[in-house]
Length: 206
Image (cartoon, rainbow, N blue to C red):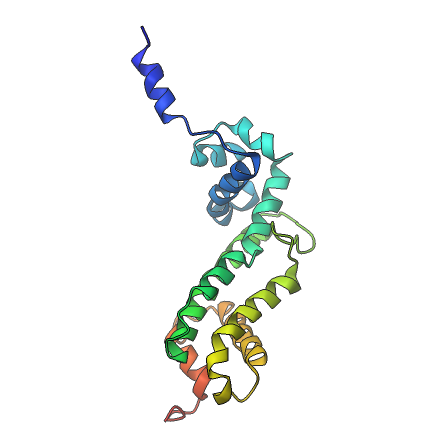
């Protein structure tokens, strides 16, 4: 007769994953832990959070350093941000589009900063930009984000002072600078978009 405990274990056992799927799952589990603990996070802690044995990590990563490198690369990847920008409804008014874009990019920049900052603060030296898991380097990543932003601006290009590509670059640069500001009393996302579109002088939007 089958032991009921064995049945419970079988039901709880995760279905088999391809190596790339398992890598992706481990990376997504590890990223928030690295943001909190930096390079001091242990593979045992990551394994527990992922619900897997520690040895499973080393079936898809050569060592902890390779895992940290892959997590940094994933955090720097533009893929998620580009998808979110592409999902914004371009039939909305331009200010609403830019508010949604700003929120998506703030989340992307915050994640980048949290991972890179935590690793740096804990003594990890990853060297140059590691590229991303999709193969894009720093400049290609920024270019893809600016291109996605430009597509959001194109319906209103006749009203813009500069072409959509240049306007997108300015907006992304503003967001990047703003993401490094520590002033809690700074402008809201909506206020930042209004300042970008209409200038800093009160009444400029009229």
